[in-house]
Image (cartoon, rainbow, N blue to C red; front, top):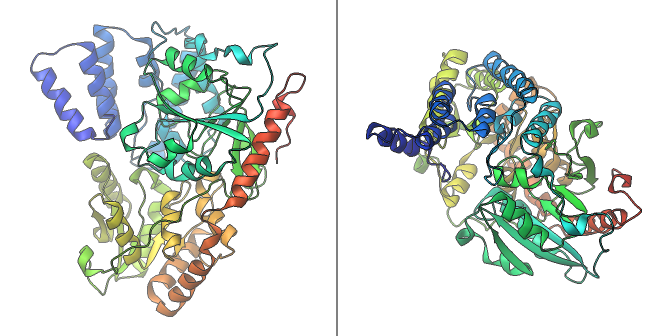
Length: 521
C-alpha cells in the first residue's frame, strides 16, 4: 500500500485471508488497498469485517469518508460527496473517541480536491472531527506557550514532509530550501515516514539538520518541538496522515502550508497558505481556512530540468506519424467527468486525433476510466490510448512527441507543466475557480505568453485542434514559450519574497502581537 502497488497489495491480503489469517489487521489492510484501487463498496465491507473482529474508532472515520478514485459520472461523484458530508455530520455528533492517539491514522478524503468544488466547509468539519476524536492533536510545544522566549538571531525554520524523495513536492520545495539566506535563516528538514534513502543529498546537506521523524505521532511532535522553531512550513498537507495530524499541534509560533497539495487544510493551527497573485482569482481568501498570502511570483524556486538527449519520435512511442497526439500526462483521478465532453468533441472534430493518457497506479483506475469513456463517448472512445507508466526520460519523450498537451479541468498540471514548458511544448488550459485548476495559467501569466489560455471549453477545443493541425502556428507558440521560460526557473525573486514574508510573520508573532494581524499580501 505505502509503495503505491495497490493491485499487488490486494492480492497479498486476499491470499493471507484465504490461508486463515482472519484477524482485524488483515481485513483493514485489505480494505485500505481496495479503497486505493477505487473499489469503495468492497473496501468498506473489509473495514466492516475488521470492525466486527476488533472495533477501532479511527476506522469509523475512514469508512465514513471513503470516496471513489475514478467517478462513474458527475452524478456518481456528487452522490459520493454528499454521502461523505452526511457521514461526517453524523460522526461529529456521535462522541467518537480514539483509543490509541499515537498512531498516525486519519481520513484525508484526498479525492475531494478533484471534484472542482469548494472544499472549505467540509475540510473544516473533517479537521474538527479529528480534533474531537483526539483532543491531544492540539498539543502546544513548550516554547510556544505564553511567556516563552523570543526569536533567536537567525530565524529557525523547519520543513516537514513525507515526500522529500523523487516526488513533485521535492521539486517544488528543494530550491527554496537550498537558497534561503543562511545569514538570516537556520533550516531544518524533517522526513515524516519518508524514504530518506531516495532524498536528494543536496536537500539534506542544505539544512543544518535532516531529521527522520519516528512513526509514533506523539514522539514525532516532541521531536519537532525540541528544535524550538520559529516557523514550521508544510510543503504539502492532505496527502499523508502523519503530516496532516502533526499540523494540528502548535509546533512553532508561525505555521504555514504551501501548494504541494493545493487545497485548504481546515486545520485551526495552520496560520498561512502561501500562494501567488499569478494563481489566485479575486476573492480567493474565501477558499481557505488559513490566511492567504499572495506572493507576486509563483511560490517556488524550481530547477530547470535537464535537457533531453534523444529526439522525439512518434513511431518509437507506438503511434503512427500521421496521428495527431493530444497528450494529457496527468494522474487519471484528475480527469473530471466535465472533461469527458471536451475529449469527445476533440476526437470527433479531428479524425486523425488520438488522446494519450498514462496508466493509473492501479489497473482498476484505467479500467474504470475506460468504462466511463465508453458510456460518455463510445463512438470515438477507441481513439483514447493508454501508455504504460514511464521513466523520467520516457515521460519527457512523451511530452515532446505531443502535438498539444491537455490540461484537465478543475485540477490541472503542476510538475508536468514546468517540465513541458521547459521543453517548449504548448499546453491548452482553461483556468478554473480554484488555484488547483490555475497553475498552468499562472505559469503562462508569469511568462507573459497566453496563446493557449482558453476562455471557454469551446475555445479550449479550438486551440487544441489548431495546435494539432497548424504546424507553423504551433512552432511559433513553442518558440515564444522557450524564449520566456526563464521566467519560471531558478527564480530568486520568489525566494526573496518568501524571506520577506517569513521575517514579517515571525515579527508579528512575537509576544504582544498576533500572527493574524499580518496583511494578506
